[in-house]
Amino acid sequence: MGARISDLFARRADGSEFPAGIRLSPFRDGDQSYVAAAIRDMTERRSISDALVAAREEADRANRAKSRFLATASHDLRQPLQAIRLINASMQKLTQAPELSDLVRHQEAAIDSATRLLNALLDISRLESGAVDPQLSPVSLAAAFDDLAREFEPVAAAKDLQLGFTDTQIVMSTDRTLFTQLLQNLVGNALKYTEQGYVRISQAIDPDALVLKIEDSGVGIPADKLERIFDEYYQIGPQGTQRVGVGLGLAIVREVSRLLGYSVAVASTLGEGTCVSVRIPRHRLLSETEAPVREDYDISTSNGASRCRLVLLEDNDSVRMATELFLTLEGFETRTAATVADAESLLVDMQAGDVFIADYHLDGKLTGLDVLQQLRSQQGRDVPAILLTGDLQSMMRVVKTSIPNCRFLSKPVDTKALVSAITELSGT
Image (tube, rainbow, N blue to C red):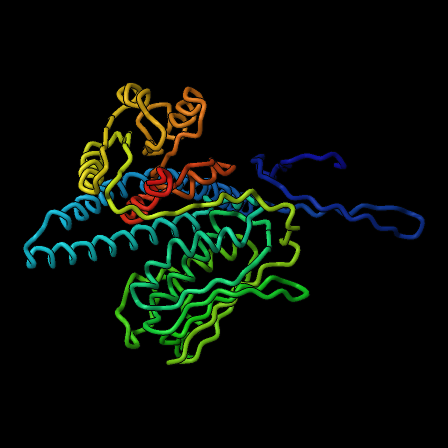
């Protein structure tokens, strides 16, 4: 009875066998030692345990299936949106009639709305499915702020808002992709609900944590609704602003914070503004010497007088056609290929200043990154490149280190961001 036996069985008086639980309890009676044995019929408990094991296995299978769906959907569902957005941008350049221009602008707004909805739904589903495992690495806060500034300064300028980021030398250990996503949602949310004034990102260090504050002079949040703003699909009623999105931005912030071990607090005054504080445990801060190497970007604008040549590798016919049309109308000489084999002859002729653009997920064994690395090895230089993907988070987890002279853009790609990246990389 002292042996480790996983399953014990007993026999009833009628000869039938049943799973048994046996508890032994030694005791003494005078000089005599005894052991009391309590035998229980474990049939019902074993049945419940087996059901729980089966339910967990089924849940695990469902999670794996959900993860596979998200990986596929993240790319495939964004492909048609990519084509539609690029065709819309091309139509804006070709359309002269004012009535048609208005329709095209309305179409652009609808495409942007669909893009935000799709991104939010896929992001929250991925986070809640347990498919995301944070990968910690040194991240420069200044570099993260630079990326946010490049992304959101056009939005702030369009609304005549001041967008400010504090100077910082802090380096922290975090998941680069998740941390960026957290800040993107907070800054984007602040800009969305601010019509005049400012959005500011500052930092403070206390004995326990680094505190990042995202402050705005927006419409504010009623006190009785503060507790619900992190709920999924919950949106505060319009307070002088248009309802945008489906209320998943702060739910994503909540899930990302949970994964990274951060805490988030919100303070707001109706009609005056909101401050979101993100507390990052002090032990996550690193010394400055551990900062990853930052690239110095020399971003220049092009007047269209001189445009570089582009080689586009895209295996989706509609996306390839739409991308080529848009880039050609932008004044770029664009050569396209549907397969890696078709692209080889085009890549051989690439010259200094030309830019390689590729979808990351290609039909076949090679990715766009694989093709780029082969191209750079053949030419012995860091050929400028832009990699497009419908699942930027998963791709960034594969790409462990910074790749020089290369930009990563998410599908459906922002057309201004695409042209800006080409201009930056080519130096035109």
